[in-house]
Amino acid sequence: MTPENLAALHARAMQFPGPWSADDFARFLETPGVFLVAEAAGFALGRVILDEAELLTLAVDPDHQRRGVGCRLLAGFEAKAQNQGATRAFLEVATTNLAAKSLYAAASWRVDGLRKGYYRAKPQPIDAAMMSKAIPNA
Image (cartoon, rainbow, N blue to C red; front, side, top):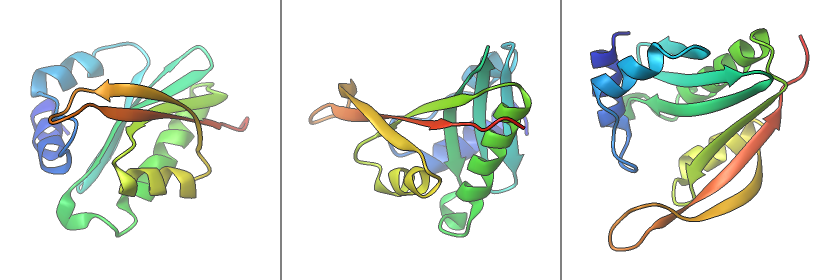
């Protein structure tokens, strides 16, 4: 997927926070340690630094949600992170994003904390749940 493809899909999938631009994706993809797991209906963008992985974003086309795409992408993210030496993975998700929170919980991610008012939304900021998961050694 090109940065333009990623941005278009991200715009369709992300209601909040706002979507990233093609330039945003291009910059991420040029960064050492960043990797992409993609299929036609969605993608996961992550990075590994030393032994820690971060899920930067996961997007699934709204026409393909609730069909296992998110589960496959998340599993692909975890596998790539493991292959790159990560032993722990982290993410943050809006507390109002019930579908994403359910996906992560079903994959054994756990809530470690809360960032109050992390996402600047109107009429009021939205908290971010900080989640993590141990990545077993290969």
